[in-house]
Length: 499
Image (cartoon, rainbow, N blue to C red):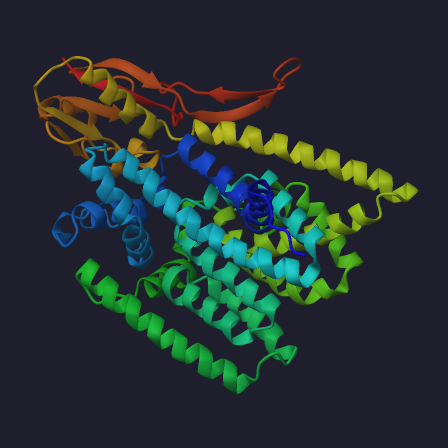
């Protein structure tokens, strides 16, 4: 005789299923959302997409008002990513507009939407990890990702690298699933639309698929050419309209970075920098675990070798940044998770027990390193904090006079975006090339400037920015240093008031 389940039992059953299916996603999403709310401002690398999102949401079809026409940047970028995020965020932005909320809240909206897209791609990879390697590997993959700072911090930042990262992660999911054609399609889209340097990863994974006979040469060429033509046609159509000239953005980026090698003008690093600095800082405890995986599980060779080769080839480019190889991190985390799972399963054996304890301690140390890195990043956007402070300070004055603000390049590159701008009587200018002697002849009320003294203005207050960290004996053991603006190239900003 069947008995009816009590409502309390049904509730517990539903909750258990939800946690089992989405618990890891909630963990990763909570960390990413925490980073958004604690550090909402954006850097110069994100400037194009964040300004494009603002303009699409607020200026709509009035392209002549868009920021990129006045400040195009070094190389053009595609509007496709910004357009997608803006469309998805538009219902939330509409509600905020009806509630007369400041535009600043829309910045939260677009970044959270981008985070959902990124974490959805990680979810698809996580599911394939569980299917292929088991629940323990899935759990350690999420744990290792959670204690790393950079991946989740970047996951909500509107960088071309992150749009490409989403497609690369989907490619990994298809790769694990054995769907070679979907893998190649995702990598082709990422290369043609968002980051032309993804062609290196496309090449190494493509060769691996051909050598393993996962796909024939004929099928691969047919798939890639058809996908490339569609993507190139789409990006040319959209970006020609938005930029006002016939344009394939990633072709110009490829020419600038690879053919002319102009990217080296923004700094260079040694060939080994990715392996001795970027990856250790990004992966933390996962870095040694990933290397051990090569010895413990030969199944990983077919996945690690192509991705490792991608980083190795990329190292030939003198200009290096972690975000350039952020797409390699998930595969390295998978390898590290397999090692962690092996250690966990053998933890009751004498030797493995000590390795297990060491691994747990290393995970805690990694968490501590991520907290310190977050503290530094929190104070790395002085321009954004300065403009927010200026708005708050002036609003308390209850003045009806015009409020004309000039934002210098340093402030614009370190946190200021159009999402931070208030409605009239506030107005803003990012005009470049103004000498210090000219400011008092211009009609500016306030200046956001890196200079501490400007004729005709007095300093209201300054905003510190992160400069460096140092160790000390005592508590706390790590001090985050700050430099005042008087020093050359200091990471701070001043707010000036017209006399």
